[in-house]
Length: 482
Ligand code: NDP
Image (tube, rainbow, N blue to C red):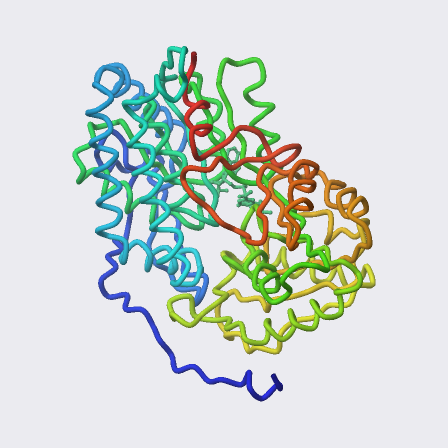
């Protein structure tokens, strides 16, 4: 294909947003009611694609956290713990169906608040969030079959803290198994993406779930810290940065609290010379540019076997030229807005660091909007293990490329990193896949595909990527004692 054939013009295909109802101000959702924050403080949530204010949300302080935990405790003791499991399941099924019914509105708000392309929020985040509720609703009255020979018991109150990259989906990952196992919840969304969690609070209120079973409070890091430190919390489920994960780990040391930490990653995506190259190039693109690279399991370190490196890099560059960066609400958009100004600055600082380390930076020639936070898809070619851009999580659309000759070499390089969340392998040989899946120190290894998720399969990391599993049968255990 010559270069001209890529010069397609796409007419704008904007998704309507008039149906998405965003209130001017949101209070805290505690005990089934909307409650004003005791400190009377609110903060803005903005659209990262145009920097316009969407709404303002309450800032919960320690007093509010206490109120939310007490409400969860009351609901646990008085209602939820005593309710037959099959009855609990009905509420969870109802929440799943209501998410489906309101999926269009949720998708639009997710894209407006977080910057991700509507295609992804519509086809990935929201359907998968509903699926998690469906899946765990099914387990609620079958826990004794899930753990044969054991007597599973709920823990009590779960404090759940989620990040900004998959706001509603992460809330679903956390709330659905907690409810199915008979626990009650206090959840905090990230400060830059609170809106779909607050919409979920509306759904929960409408679903008739007993008051206090799920409480959703907004705020900053100190709100999260107050949740973690609250003495009446039995379980902490956290997804976010490794730095905050370490703080939480220290804070709960010596307490009886159960913890799961899903932290950062720096996954190796490995392409062998016998791989279907065109398919692998699609997998590389999906691995690093999906959700602007704001993905803990992003395939951010590409390893290509030396004899096909030239071909892979050339095809990858051509494919990058076709990626559309821009308005998240346009259905043609492949790469939306970077979630926040701070995150864009962090990514830009790594683009500088990589160049200062002597690496060749390649960016696609696309135009990016003048307003809002955007970043061109970027490659660092000729990277080495010691480069900071290889070792540190960038959390943006930036891929490093290294080459390798032997299978032993690539296993050594792939594992030589503080993280261990995920990896990808591209090869024609099943035996090679099995060899790598057993030797790569990563919680998830995808073979000839990437970024595939399903509520039935467990997800989680090794080393500094955290511990505990979410999803599947494994995702029930952290919410139970035996
Ligand atoms: P954080 O870990 O700071 O945020 C994750 C969640 O934890 C948010 O809800 C945050 O609240 C809350 N939080 C912050 N401080 C505390 C604390 N001391 N105790 C309890 N909860 C707390 O991630 P950032 O948003 O700051 O992102 C920084 C980097 O982390 C990114 O650049 C990326 O590399 C990585 N990251 C990894 C993610 C993953 O899925 N593995 C997800 C998100 C980020 P608030 O938003 O109000 O600060």
